[in-house]
Length: 537
Image (cartoon, rainbow, N blue to C red; front, side, top):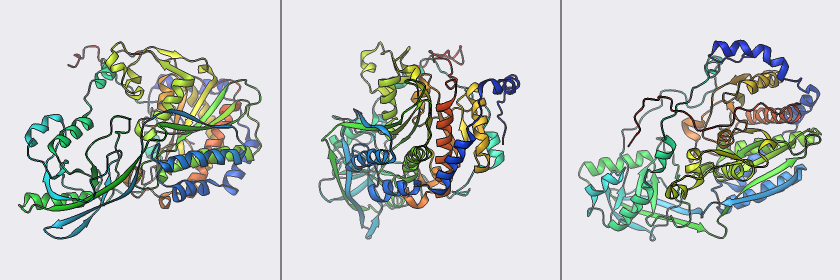
């Protein structure tokens, strides 16, 4: 097993003495039950297949997401969990794709690969027109193109030159790479950085208003990845913020061809169609929650979570049906093993993660802690996920101390290789003990690094011990994340079986520990890292 490395010698010397005082023996008899269930009776791939092949891409508030909300509740009840419920929070409009197509009609006929950009409207039937290559990345670019775009299909991205991969797209962490992940990364705090970011204009709204006023037929952006991959991500989901102009994303190779033809003096013409539907029956999104009741520690609970929502370019398999299936399978394993945890174990399938961790934030704000409003009323009216980090002080809710630990799974389909302890030295020592029975499954590393970008983040911002596992990267970042090939085919059954075992083991250890998992101090407004940095304008 890889020992915990801190990169800070004084802290390293403290840990060995601290381990016996904080860690208690792992229940290895229960581990045998968990291993048997996870290795010999796993249902994780059946769950993943239902979420992907059967339901498909689960855009928040889309019909497919409504199916997923219903099916996962039924599945938790089948497993035998208690208090299964859907907990709503305000989100906005649902949206789904009916069909889309693009065809170059001149100088030669050619089918092109496109996908509608999320939450943009349909085209006005099949639209035809010449393209205009008009790269627009800020409001400062509008003046250059004013009066030149009417009746055109506008290509708004710089095309770039393309690239070929220089490293394998599929890989696993080596021992050396895991060892390199164990040093603590220090934070950097710029004066008033969080509040300054709130004053940035909404460029998507500015761009839509400009293009609508110019009378364009549609706009097209380039895919952020080569290789024919498409994404279609977009964020104008709130009621009253729906754009007026249809937007599409085009495969990078097709997009660059159009730009080259245009710059060579041959004005390409296109036929485009985007047919989408908005769903306004219910503007609330729903987190799915379910419990294994505790037997001894009152209202205390530990929690596992993954986000159920996805984008719709494909079926949202690695991002994040994989995590949802692992959470559901961990629940099944623990129920089938017959464990009676001291603390309640709560399972959460979050909604709206892809639009800014909205579901987990709603849970934290409602049940755990909130933050004081901003003095500036205009900024305070912005969505909570934008203002959260700028609001001080933190105000704990009545249930703040009840949530003892949270474990998240959202880095694709790769097996768990360890856990990020988020700078929590005391918890890291306990995690080392918990990993010892799992060494032979490849889970060995405890890192003090902070990790971001997913649903444990808002737990951490209010002082709850929230953690993200270290997973093998596989091809997640290289070609799967948010793309049109994120399907069941790229899930790894052996890895997901292992991950569900590790998740179940961590939940049981946290639920049965005599003392709650050690917490970091309650966060307070940070001091500027560089006290002499000039405030930004």
